Image (cartoon, rainbow over all chains, first blue to last red; front, side, top):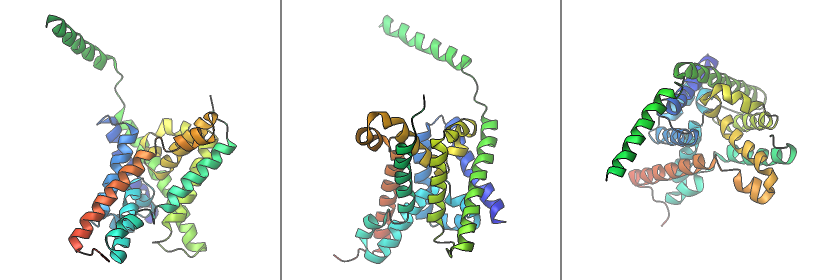
Length: 116
Length: 158
């Protein structure tokens, strides 16, 4: 069942992105930045965790989850150490995604040749 | 003054012609494609999550990191072989919104700018597209964190 909800919720978030690009004529960069901020605000309101419980990867795979993880890390660390935790905790959870993207992209640049 | 008016009228005429000639974007079909492809990528993510939870003792809270890292690895590989970009021409937001699109934007710029050298080219341009996501996400998270701290009054050691 979680697979079905992952498909539906993940697909719908992509449709929202498509509507922003086609309907509001935003560039992909504006669309992604907006979705990340939306994810961050939703987690600030405590709603994103519920979406993850409900839709699994349908909520963790879209870029909105990046905003969610940034806020989640910041607030969790703020709970432990106070104001400074907001800064030290922001990248705690997203580290895997950002590090993986940097490392693999660099390795890809070593291996692959540019096309055209 | 009349020169200005002429310019204004020319602009308006141009806008009219341009909007008539510009092909209508097939919004409905694009949304269907985005839904199917985006949903499919999330299902792959769910399969990877389930795999890690069954065989590597991750739980629902910790499985996100290895899942995202795996998806990013696959996406970078497909980008290198030139498959992801062909796919994204078809799927639009369906491939751009998932985290694989984030990885794709980094890997494709990294490979593209290889000709300008590794420091100025690859290092300097990797975040050309992905940077705005990180900047706006981080600033938003910071503001929310400050609001949270003020609301809860947990200022920590001072």
